[in-house]
Amino acid sequence: MIIRAIVLILGSFILYVLQTGLFSSFSLAGVVPDLLMILVVSIGFMRGRTKAMLAGLLCGFYIDCCYSSVVGIFPLFYIIIGNLAGFSHKIYDDDDHMTPLMLTAVGELLYNLMYFVVFYLLQGKINLSFYIYRITIPRIVYTVLVSIILYRILKIANLYLLRFDKDE
Image 1: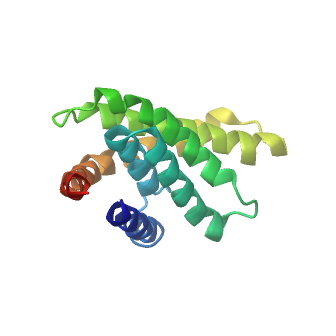
Image 2: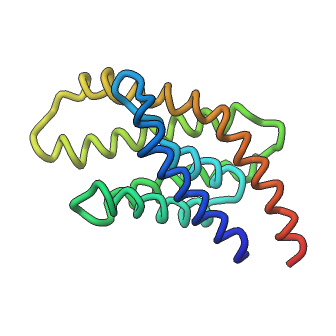
């Protein structure tokens, strides 16, 4: 349990640094893949709702600390997505690779819609079609493409950490 918590804290911090540092240099169409979304959805898919919501809380606070003037919005977004992704935990199969990709795409769509409502719609900016075509669709595509590789790494890490759960 403690080892898994340490790995989650370090892993989410590393993904946050990669997302804000390395991948910002490789932005396509002006968007960066959401590595933290991939982490939250993968944990929800592999470990369940509670652990995904805790990961969402942690990942949301990373974003809040650096980018948000309102504390709590991004953790709420990631907690909701982690909760929804965690429902798929019951159907988890080691050979299933399409479900996490679809969950990542749906999670990214929900995240972008919630972001639009909170940060644009409430300020009177109502051009949803521009936001969807210029930001949401490229971000979903880029995040899903990166999640193909990152999900495999997270799956290997989960299998490795399952050995520690059996020892406890």
